[in-house]
Length: 112
Length: 111
Image (cartoon, rainbow over all chains, first blue to last red; front, side, top):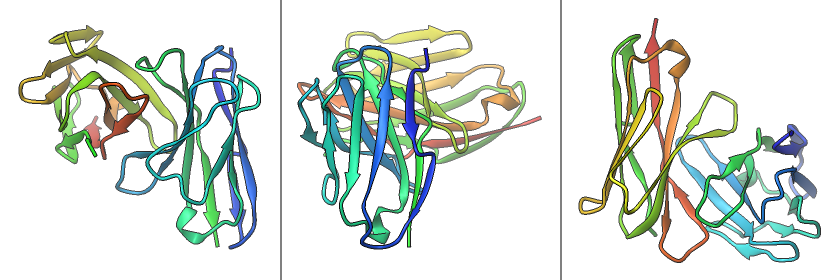
């Protein structure tokens, strides 16, 4: 099993450009999450999903959109990237709400 | 919002010593989890402790939970250089789907 995978691993964007980050999991988990991690800070939840076709806002959702069209995939979109979105983005999944979250390796995003 | 806060922010010890890091949180929880993050990598789950549990062990790891003090501690015994990493606690608020992560403790184990 690959677990949780993320693509791309690294990306550089110019301000105003758009992009989509892809998260895939092969563990048949219902719950999926997108976090961002900034220096000196813990992970902050951007959006999450409790099942296929559902999404909900987390702690810092502004400037991001998500979709969960298939159970195994959770997409994070930036419609108009801003320098403040420079960060490392982590995807995670879990079987149940209050169980262990399994993390992907992260996507490092630099917005110039 | 509730948050797990780790203490200390940074810790440097010699190989073979024990490392203790603490986590405090603000509101009632269902579970508390500890994760490890090696530099440049994703988080790896270490231990989940439920609110009705007081202590859990996993290999060289020992986690305690004191719900009356809203705090938890992670003890790593006989530390190794490979334990060098950042350690995060994550707490969930009762009835939510969301875990809140602390800012982490950076552990450095010197060989």
